[in-house]
View 1 (spheres, rainbow, N blue to C red):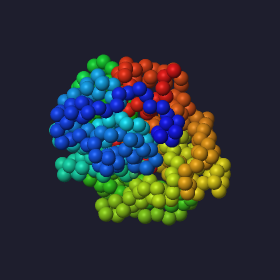
View 2 (view 1 turned 120 degrees about the horizontal axis):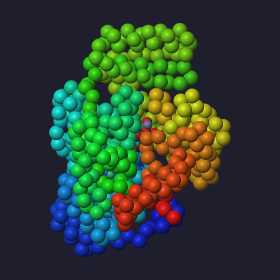
View 3 (view 1 turned 180 degrees about the vertical axis):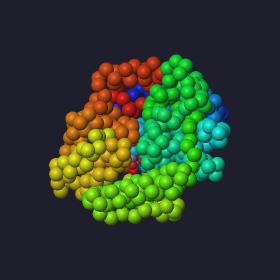
View 4 (view 1 turned 90 degrees about the horizontal axis):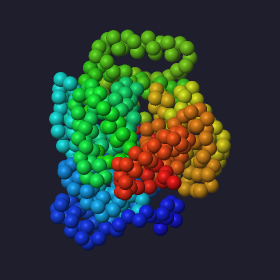
Length: 427
Ligand code: FAD
Ligand code: MLT
Ligand code: ZN
């Protein structure tokens, strides 16, 4: 029983009935999945740590279809779980109980690209890597990149406000996303799909949906500012007690190389770096990045993974790894720290042979308290989802949490959108 496994009670939502099935089959014929075998991968998260028991997956193609679906679900009080590529790491992308899964997988069309402004408008279900390939042919790139690029959807990226490997260079989605189209819980379509660099007319509503993890609306299209494909890229892989990857991207290779060489001479002479390699050709660059990008996957082969995603002052970044290692001793298999140094973002991962309550109790709330004492964030880039919603108060004051709950209640009064996620239930 889910309530026993997770200590959560199912809220009094309706159960999917035969007449609901008839309605959806009529609305999106052939795109209603109820076969238990087909549903299985959509019910379990990427880490295989959270499992729901949804009996229905819907695959709309347009915002109008999403609108009809939500209008109906809201009226019938049927809970829904928006899902993109299902690569989320906090259990937000899969149902907890029997929520209807609404997948954006078939909403995968580029709507427009302006090669003067670099503004791309596309549907939410476009896979990040496909968008990047599409843009590269036009001499542009996506402003974000992450290890899950082959599966994650741009809508999921926006819904989680994903950070990733290019954030230091091109900024966060809060800056590069120029507009969104969102379907609200009652089915109304909010068209804020502006393709403007500047727009100060009233409140910036799209920001509410960036990082809202499917709890305030379903993102159906995204307008995003894309940088030019850099003419010169250098990647350096350096080692001392730690390994670091630094990528430079610019427009003049001679100039970039000169600057990089000056930097390398400096760090080698200072003894900070003991070894390293430089890559300029695409194949070697990709190979080196894959070492970094596949850490997440590698850890899953080491056993059960307890995953933390923290923002900390850069000078404190690794102290938590050392303190956690000392605290857990032999009860953990490995305590690993990696992340995005330039962003002050530590990924603290603890592996063990199997899941244990006592190990979890030794980690939490220790990790959150440690982070809070340095005014860090307990969710730097992955979101709160199902796993971390009860720890929000370590990074946000009570007044902020209350306001978030009020916004949620206003936009989704029946609470049908991704229930049990992101925010603790309001008292
Ligand atoms: P899903 O996992 O399907 O969903 C994530 C959340 O968004 C859920 O709450 C879901 O309900 C909601 N959602 C999805 N689509 C929509 C929509 N259209 N409208 C409203 N809500 C929606 N994250 C980083 O920030 N940086 C990284 O470097 C990074 N690297 C990763 C590497 C790997 C190997 C993996 C597995 C994950 C990584 N992630 C990283 C986690 C990251 O959150 C996701 O990869 C990605 O942003 C989620 O996109 P998705 O389409 O898979 O969304
Ligand atoms: C990463 O930086 O590799 C991702 O955020 C995924 C992870 O934390 O493992
Ligand atoms: Zn990361």
